[in-house]
Structures are given as C-alpha cells and as structure tokens.
Length: 155
Ligand code: HEC
Ligand code: HEC
Image 1 (cartoon, protein in one colour):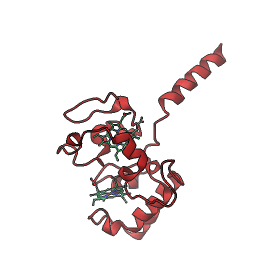
Image 2 (spheres, rainbow, N blue to C red):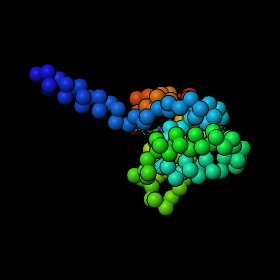
Image 3 (cartoon, rainbow, N blue to C red):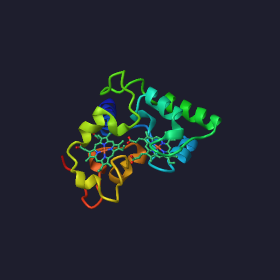
Image 4 (tube, rainbow, N blue to C red):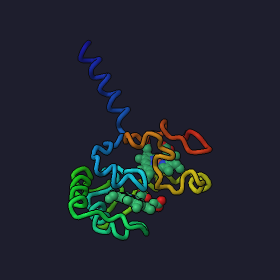
C-alpha cells in the first residue's frame, strides 16, 4: 500500500512538472541578463545559440549588452552547461538567437491574436512574464497564463 501511494504521488509530481523548465539559479546571470528583459532560462535555446549570443553582445538586438571578458566567460559557461545540445523542433543547422523564432515557440503561440501582443503592457512576445506569471519559476503551464487586459487562456 505504501509503495502504491508513493508511486501515485510520484506520477502526479511528474505529470504536474512535465512542462517545467529549470529556473535561473545564477546571480550574475539574473543581474546582467535580467536587467533589460526577463532572464530567459538556458534550457530555452540550444548551446550553439547561447554561444552566438555571447559572441555578439556588442550588437545585441540593436543594443550594446557587452560585458567584460571574465563575466562573459562565466555566463557562457553557465548557459552552455544548462542548455541542451539541440531542441526537438530545431534542425542542427539552425542557430536562432531568439526563443521566439523557434518552431516550437511559434507553434505554441500561433493562436494568440496580434492585438494582445501589440498592447503596450507587453511590448513584444519576448516579454514572457507579462503572460506567464510564473515564468521566473520555470512554470509555463496553461493554468499560470494571464494575458494583460484579457486574462486566462483556455485552449
Ligand atoms: C541593454 C539591454 C539588454 C541587456 C543587458 C541584455 N539584453 Fe537580451 N535583449 C535586449 C533587447 C532590446 C532584446 C529584444 C527584445 C524584443 O524584441 O522585445 C533582447 C532579446 C534577447 C533574446 C531573445 C528573446 C526572444 O525573442 O526570444 C535573448 C535570448 C536575449 N536577449 C538574451 C540575453 C542575454 C543572455 C543577456 C546577458 C548576457 C542579455 N540578453 C542582456 C536587450 C538586452
Ligand atoms: C501574449 C502572452 C504570451 C507571451 C508574451 C508569451 N507566451 Fe508563452 N504561451 C502563451 C499562450 C496563450 C500559450 C498557449 C497555452 C496553451 O494553449 O497550452 C503559451 C505557451 C507556451 C509554452 C508551452 C506551455 C505548455 O504547457 O505547453 C511555453 C514553453 C511558453 N509559452 C514559453 C514562453 C516563453 C519562453 C516566452 C517568452 C520568450 C513566452 N512564452 C511568451 C502566452 C504567451
């Protein structure tokens, strides 16, 4: 009986956490890469994307996000250590700099009307936390979505 209960709670736990992504646990990353926008979790892009991002920080989406050599190296290590070699939806020849350019992301967000995304409360689709209120915890489940001026999402 005890084993059964244990198995049951384990499967509930696995089910509930199936869409969770490991939260950011690096103070330097949170500080440097979370100052202009949400600190995107390393697992959202493959290693090669982060390598490219860290090599091009001087010209980062029309801004200069460059850091000194030491911090750049530290963050590159943190990112590549925690990122997958590839994403299921990507071919290995693709190296997107944007999470929002990946096929998986596009598929998940294709039903959202443009008028929700273009409102000033959001700025852009890259503003994950505006809708995914628990994004900082790595929880992107439907239940935790709350789109500004619209509310919850029921697919
Ligand atoms: C000086 C401000 C600034 C800093 C600092 C900064 N970024 Fe950005 N980042 C931007 C802007 C602007 C965009 C484009 C956002 C948009 O399109 O809404 C962006 C976009 C991104 C995106 C793409 C988001 C998407 O659409 O999927 C990633 C990934 C990213 N940044 C990673 C980083 C990392 C890693 C660091 C730290 C090394 C960092 N950023 C630091 C300004 C910054
Ligand atoms: C305009 C609000 C909005 C923004 C901004 C947004 N999302 Fe979403 N996201 C949604 C909606 C709505 C869904 C679809 C939920 C569904 O139908 O299951 C979704 C789905 C997802 C899913 C799949 C969740 C699951 O359980 O299947 C992930 C992962 C995700 N978003 C990550 C992100 C990331 C990372 C960002 C920022 C780069 C982001 N989202 C920006 C609204 C948003």
